[in-house]
Image 1 (cartoon, rainbow, N blue to C red):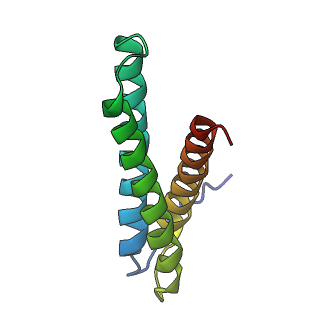
Image 2: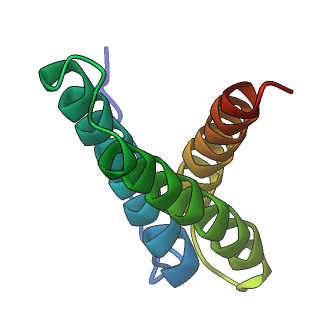
Image 3: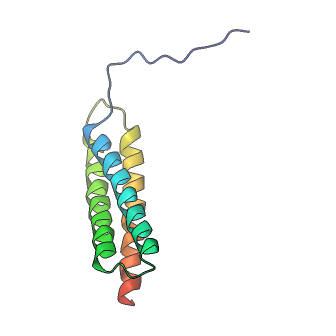
Length: 106
């Protein structure tokens, strides 16, 4: 029985936009998590501080989604981080938009 090793002989790299999008998605998740933690710590009375973290999370997620989707235009690159960043940012943007709409009573 022969074991095959998976080697990649390529000079391709990840897209710059995908790397930025993934980093922005992670930052959006961390910002949201920190806002939730502050809200629990203040027993729901954190006020505008938590709202600013939510808005920051939404803005990073929306911009990260756009950057991630635009990164698919780069030629001869790996698109793994573009897919991950676009998905994480897109999900966070939709989630944060729904939270804001619930807050408005829509």
